[in-house]
Amino acid sequence: MTIRTRFAPSPTGLLHVGNIRTALHNWLWAAKHGGEFWLRIDDTDPERSEERFVDAIRADLGWLGLNPHGQERQSERFALYEARFEALRAAGRVYPAYETQAELDLKRKIAAGRNLPPLYDRAALALTDADRARLESEGIAPHWRFKLEHETPIEWDDLIRGPQRFDAKTMSDPVIRRADGSWLYMLPSAIDDAEMGITHVVRGEDHVSNTALQLQMFDAMGATPPAFAHEALLTGSEGKLSKRLGSLGVEHFRGSGIEPEAVRALLARIGTSDSVEPVVEVATLIEGFDFSRFGRAPARFDEVELATLNARIVHQLDFARVASRLPNGMGAAEWAAVRPNLTRIDEAGEWWRVIEGPITADRDPADADFLAAAARIAASLDWSAEPWGALTAQLKAETGRSGKALFLPLRRALTGLDHGPDMKALVPLIGQTRTVQRLS
Ligand code: GLU
Image 1 (cartoon, protein in one colour):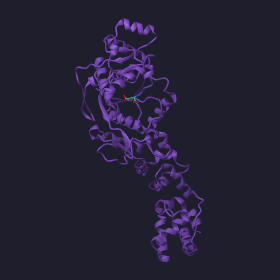
Image 2: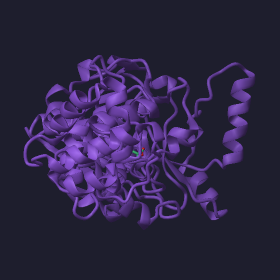
Image 3: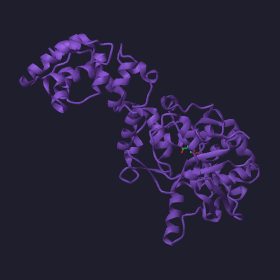
Image 4: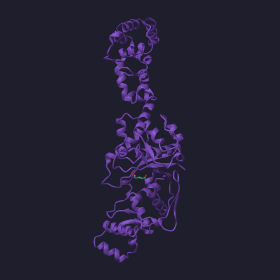
């Protein structure tokens, strides 16, 4: 059996970090089993769905390296939903209801006043053909509910939450279709999961009660349900469901110099018993991914942690991986020299300017003789050997300086800065001519 997962965003906005995490976990699970990861665009609602968000979702998944094996769009599958709907209706599992929103609200208030749960009372099931004809002649179009089967408990073994049990009697028959014929999320999703041969549904725990309802839909359609993994939701670093998380997406990450490897490494492991590490190779994440590692507590997303992880990822990236994003002329040796000092790739440009010059450097008059000696020695060195070691050794012998007094004036004169990449790696790249000029 091919393992097949799906990521099913509604294209009503940009993906945020919570969606990205769900997509990643579906992708990892499929990859781990040599299976397939599908993108399903849940665009049944034409009012709220926008093409630009469909494009953005695809582009974001591409940037993250989570490429789907295939794609479906719910807006292209209405004929299928219609057919399944008719079959369920013929089987008595969907029924028309005529209450207005105001009537339903009133029923809920009455129930609350009696200390009863706000359950739909199934009044529509008691209507006769004549009642329905009268309501429809009054111009009231029905909406449609799925009729839950009350007798058997709803049970599944959740891959993260363990054994789950719901009593259908405590749940309202869900509305699956509006009076204007448009679909709500619940039934099309179950139809697609069945039709697309989805074997595992990985989603947030806000869908747990939907799963209970959808399991009855699978059953009513004679379909085998997928396995389910409901993850604890993501929270902000402050520990609360944070509004900010909803605005953090690929655009924000890219703009902050965050690499897709860092996003993947963090989101694969937060909320699990595995420690977050700067894992560049996705194969490592795939191998270690398992729902048994997931905890029930909310996963904390911390932007500071992401930035730190990102720096540790950048320190490992090969030249070939970053070449197209470096300044013209910057090569593998320059990348290797500056990489340990970066927190993001675009900072390489600042070091490239230091290498290429011109730079401005303050000189302490007290260092004048020292730097003049340095310039003289630099001009005499064989630059193809290891010039920094030779320069500092000769200067130390000549001037008696050591430590900071030896190194800092040189670094300042050569880079204009107090801190930076290892001078041993930098000086060969600055080259003999510029080194002598800067020291003079
Ligand atoms: N479109 C639904 C959502 O974004 C899909 C949920 C699911 O994975 O079934 O919430």
